[in-house]
Amino acid sequence: MTGNVIIADCGDSALVAKAVGLDAEPAWRLVHALADVLNALQLTGVHDVVPTYDALLVEFDCAATDHATVRRVLAHEAARLGPHPAPTTPPRRFVVPVVYGGGYGPDLPEVAAQLGLSEGEIIALHSGTDLTVRCLGAPAGAPMTDGPPFPKPVPRLASPRTRVDAGSVAVAGRQAVICPMPSPGGWPLLGRTPVRVLDLHSDPITAYRPGDTFRFRPIEPQQWDEFADLALGDCAETPDLVVGHG
Amino acid sequence: MADTLTIRTAGIVTVQDLGRVGRSRYGLPANGAADQHSARVANVLCGNDDRAPLLEITALDFACVPSGDILVAVTGAPAEVSVGGVVRPQWEPLPVRAGETIRVTGINRGLRVYLAVLGSFEAEHLQGSCAPDTILGFGPPLRAGDELALRTACPPIDHPFSRIPLFRLKAPVPPFPTSWTIDVTDGPDRAEFGDTGRRLFDAPFTVTPRSNHIGLRLQGAVPRRVTQGEVLSRGVPIGAVEVPAGDELLVLHRGRGVTAGYPVLAVVTATGLSALGQVRPGQTIRFRHRTLDQAITAHRAQRQAIDALRTRVRTTFEALRIRAPAGV
Image (tube, rainbow over all chains, first blue to last red; front, side, top):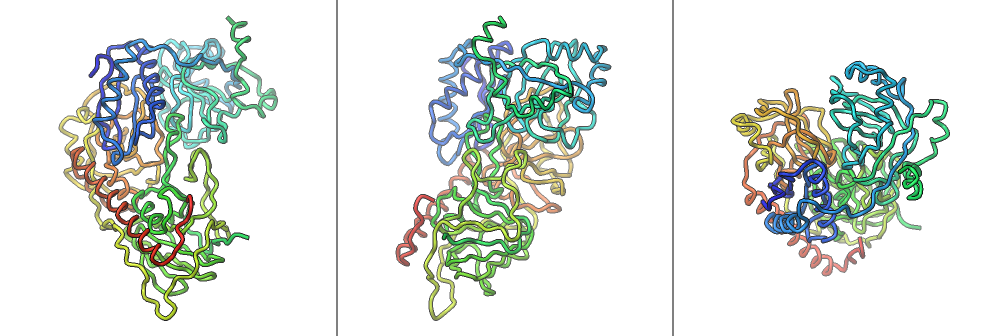
């Protein structure tokens, strides 16, 4: 306990540091800054870090290091960063084309009904704000973003789908996501982007990182092919354009 | 032209290594050999780097033929192993002459057999590993007729006049019982299960067929969460024992999604995970509670046994003038 994190054992090969006493934004900032620091330190035996919203999972080989060593470093670095660490890299903004509704977003009518809004209002809210990427999660580098400013949380599907198409754009609770690869999923689908989310042969495989923002742009189904050859990285705005958008 | 290893009977076989490290942050699970201990020992018995590509043979019969003389080692679940029709032991290096068929049949008690080749073979890598990732669609199972390009030849070293086994390297062989004991430590959310958490240790659980390298689903007297409220998605370790809605226990394995939103009741130990990689659907598991110190001591002992084996292999190979593979 160092004031802003609690560090708990998570089996014989991991620790979890959880931010405490902080609002969501500084808690998120702290666990990601802590992950950056750990990566840079390249501690013997520590091989993976998973920063999410308010927690950081640190995985290590307990034959090469031990809990006490990793715990000491985490506590020290958390204290050094303080409750309000500065962002390390400037965020980028991605404008992501999405075909809403129909076969592309089969749950759009259901979500609209649950929230007491029209389908058009759901689309306007989902594509009307910059959504911040909070972490990369399952499956396979999926960008987990803040949800759009809906009036209330969106329930998960009663029965998850066994297969969700790559590029599907989904919401649940107060979160949103783009599904990068075909996989099972329990989040309601609003639409689908034609752009390729991952580049498996670049390192890292994602063009986006936590802190970047997505702005969804509605397109018509007949425009699908115009974007089908694009990667998500191609949708990043240049710094000049970001200024232009204010 | 380089020699090849041709797959004759495929069954369920993939090219594996110990998994993808350092990519969890980008949402990629480790994957890699489900029984890390057996995979590691197979490579060590061939004088390879622990992380060299090898074959993971799951449940079904397998056969392959090399076009040149090689040395292999077969570890993992008990099976009948033969080379050129002669029965050969697991957990020892096996010389194989060009054209001889290596057969692995009747895999029993455990689920996965590992076959390493001295010098290893060429394998496609993605993000630093050749381990299959089923979500990314990388590393499809091998099929009959597939050829792997061997990196090194191994001159024949079999005794010219007798067929007695050449090696007695005493590799550390784990138990393969019919009913498994799997070690766990307390999970970070143990308190959320109150008194029901003890159920984990009270009675055995049965592994259901809906189990794979991503996770094992177990049936039995399932502990219940006694607290309310959403758990924010966060990183979960390999080995996390979770209780999603429903009446099944979920134990995450090496292909698990790196984030999840269920409370973690317990975490399978590093040695327990290798054992769990061998449990067959239909078999039963009893969980055994361990302290962190006990779990770490067991893991370190297992690694030290492998380190000692590595030394014996080196000495033996030098005595037999077997050239240890370079940079594999």
